[in-house]
Image (tube, rainbow, N blue to C red; front, side, top):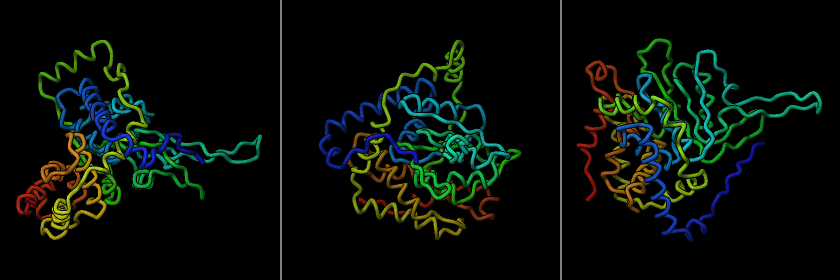
Length: 332
């Protein structure tokens, strides 16, 4: 069985490190944002949201057209935190064992041994995840939610931290399979990079004239510090009224006539965790309603199934969430 070698700090040790450790982690996060900004130009909001998902111990789905830097951003993140990076190109013939690993027979010892697959990494890029069959896509479910791989009666723990950054082509492109709802629900956020503005696009071209900026990244954090960050995020306070506000948003998605499948209890947990991380990055020890508003669409939209009538009328999940936010009372 593979064992995680990263040290797991106890609650007592984490408490002893505050507040100096908290300030130290926030300084490191500023350096991380700056480093990623040298690779992905003009996208500070997306970078902040990606780091928010990392701090919340969540996975990210990036749906966008090819060539805008989705994989580059993931690779840059792994290099910046001194983590192990793996990339899997999803294709129709990809098998679950190509992701998870398999048992190999050793004729000298007369026994099988487990050969881990590329999923055993800190940052895993599932490139064009919707090009693989649903059977292969489902191989990631346990990894994404429980951070482990169960094969042949044995459980193998994944490294800490572990994050899946899946890229997805728009569903109208040829040769794609829609992601099942159970898998979509395991992504903390869905992000889009979009095309850069003209000045930034020109800068990107000249930055890569001689070499790739991602290859020149110097790590600014390590995996132990990321794990400490994830523990520190959980200490961010959520007032009861803010919790009720988030619950109201979640439950409203289940009763809206334009939605046939609303957000799950897992969505509430991830929304709260992302709000904690967002507040921590902003330098606060408590969550504000504005944090929830800023994250609601990113955390909830990909989980909702819109009614066909509303969909054909041009209404998106983001539109419905915006309506729900407008009519939901904000705690004072």
